[in-house]
Image (cartoon, rainbow, N blue to C red; front, side):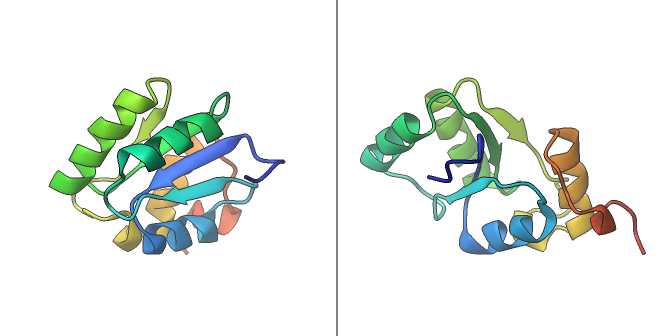
Length: 117
């Protein structure tokens, strides 16, 4: 656990994590579920993330929707962040789009991603 970060973003895969890390300026913990998550891992996460600001940012597809429902049950206070359905995957969405989503959630992002060059 990152002691200075009160923010956790749950994503599906490592490629999602890498893209978000490029954009985010403040310390956040990005947790990969690798598409699915078992009950024991889920229980660990619930314990680990207690009292923190949790965000769910998964792909806009059937598996992402299923994972979001599962996570929402376990983290009822988590904020859902959505990428535009036209991009389908977090990892392939433009960095500017990810920056806008994170900024709206009050997560500090690098300024260069806030406008198209």
